Image (cartoon, rainbow, N blue to C red):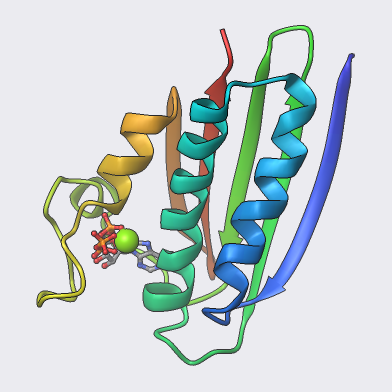
Length: 141
Ligand SMILES: Nc1ncnc2c1ncn2[C@@H]1O[C@H](COP(=O)(O)OP(=O)(O)OP(=O)(O)O)[C@@H](O)[C@H]1O
Ligand SMILES: [Mg+2]
């Protein structure tokens, strides 16, 4: 199989969010995406990582986030799996509804998953056994 893989583990600190999105964007550039495609993926990764920090670990600034990337050169897509071991999501279907948020107020609009779906071809969320996973796939053609 013509693939390349990379795993990044970061602490759930807010200053690591921009680091993580840049690293994934740099890895994605091996597929020769457009600038817009890179920006779209970085935005989706940013939403997922922010969710781990804010919701998964509830801003505690500790806890592990794993970001597992795979480039598929034959089929021209990247797969990014973002995993945390925080509090988890009881009802994934409900969490993914537009405007649904458990932190209402000015900062959160409940649009994170909707943004991921707008910028990626595939978004799959699973939560259970102490682990929450968001799987993104972005195609370049
Ligand atoms: N990694 C996670 N761990 C636990 N709960 C999560 C996680 N990711 C999302 N959620 C839950 O899903 C809800 C919806 O997430 P979404 O990203 O769509 O909206 P938001 O984070 O509340 O607001 P926004 O992303 O617009 O700032 C969150 O309010 C939270 O309850
Ligand atoms: Mg969010």
